[in-house]
Amino acid sequence: MMDRREILDWLRCTDSQQLERLWQQADRLRQEQVGDAVHLRGLVEISNHCARACHYCGLRAANQAIGRYRMSEEEVFACALAAQHLGYGTLVLQSGEDDGIKADWLAGLIRRIKNATPLALTLSLGERSDDALAAWREAGADRYLLRFETSDRALYRAIHPDRGSRVSDRIAILGKLRALGYETGSGVMVGIPGQRYETLADDLLLCRELDLDMIGIGPFIAHPQTPLWQAQSPLSAEDQVPPTIDMTCKAVALARILRPDANIPATTAVAVMNASLGRELALRRGANVIMPNLTPPQYRELYAIYPGKADRIETAEAGDNQIRAQVLALGRTVGSGPGGRSGRSDTERQSPEPGPVPPVSLKIAVCMGSSCFSRGNNGQTIETLRHCVEAAGLVPEITGHLCENLCTQGPHVTIGDTLYSNVQASCFAELLRHHLASGKEGIDG
Ligand code: SF4
Image 1 (spheres, rainbow, N blue to C red):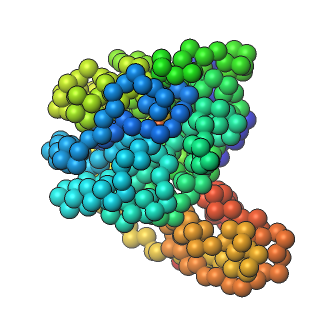
Image 2 (cartoon, helix red, strand yellow):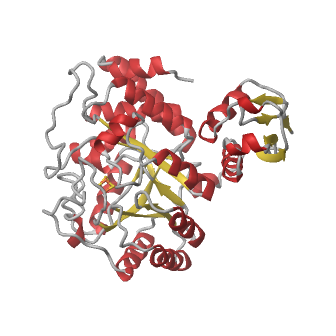
């Protein structure tokens, strides 16, 4: 297990020979854990309306210099058919935080796409109400992406103000998404003005702790019509993380080492910073996903999160050809099927396994006494526990019982025969890993 000190050493490392070891380790783990397939996920930017005021993003509500659009149901559906036609396994619907995208409208569209195509559906629509998230999951959405951007709360609030009285807590929303059964994706920006190396190390550790299914990492790029355009960092050059391709690749490689089986995209921002090499470098250093842009050309320039984002490729087919050529030139293959958490393509999954593996169950008892319940041991926590155990490849046997009589140290969870105190759902994945690594009792073959 790589610790914070080691992560910091890598983030500060400038020796290209040593860094070669990091790239090789990340690439080897990528190959072992998720295979050679690069999954293509068709991206459709369905609306550039946004109610938020993020200090770096061109879609912020205060930016009146861009025209706004919201795609119609028929336009989005046509993009879904295009994604299927191009052989993609996943469609990603992305927008600003647009209250004009009504929960019912999108739920109907999700059902229509799921009925007509075999596509997995990923949503990336910002911080939406619990009811909307539940309705979209029920309609068939499979995954949700919501970047927490930085683990430093003060820095986060400085660049991503609350929306009126609505306090932004993306970590809490990620927990809800998981409890709803979404595969969850999140991630960070590299080089936010005021971001220290220690902060970036904590960001990466939080990606591990959250047991993310997908980790998106891109360099910080501010839009000209925003307060952070060409902003000076309050930190010295020695302390400030630079928003460079190399630093982003280090974060990608470290994310692969910390969460070996996650899906990690070579982000568009990396490709924008270095059009000829950015994507390739990320793919060589741990990434296994690309999101080709299927947004109709007339909208692409309007989805101006940062400058230079709208690529010049006019058609989905032309972009697809270019990306496939890039993937094949790297000696990799293009993935088939939805490419979920296991990361392996459907073709790879069909290869014969070495032999039958007996099901293994893990007994977990959750204290449901009133004190533990009020401290967090509720139905949502149980869903999180169940998901974490299943993600570890085990069959959960979860029971509730009444009181451990240790109320001041709750909430309590017993794994096998070991009682754990102060257990928070957000840390359970990490606790489970430690429990299993320690070889403690409680696993039944
Ligand atoms: S980063 Fe997202 S939430 Fe913030 S202004 Fe841009 S689109 Fe809106």
